[in-house]
Image 1: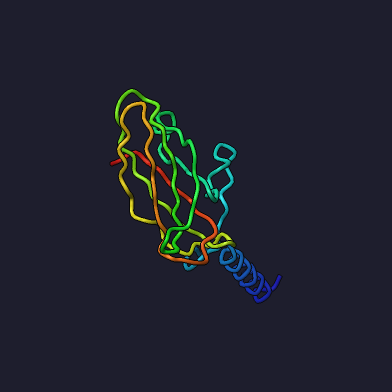
Image 2: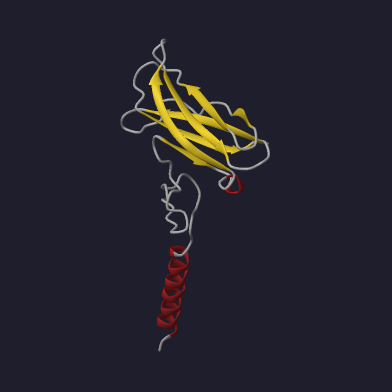
Length: 148
């Protein structure tokens, strides 16, 4: 082969290697698409509307959610409540908060502040929360955790 042909083949090979190397550069800057987490060990990882979620695993064996419901207050806000049973022989401190959603399950208010609730041994107590809005509320979601 002639020297010019060898040089042009070498240049073409270098350009091909350079382009192949550039094609593998991954850029992970900027916004990315949302990713749904699917885990068979946690089938209820997403919020369930009109329900109570006990966040602390150790608390799940200590309390029972006996009943939940809602009603309109005289001011027109939505009151949500959950009747909790302490299943242990000793007193517990539990914190709860609620979030309210519209009929399409879109959040219309941020979560409320954590509210502390004392549960004497083998007793029941009621967690209550009121929405700030008077209309457009269709669903609720209550979270419970052991007091910190």
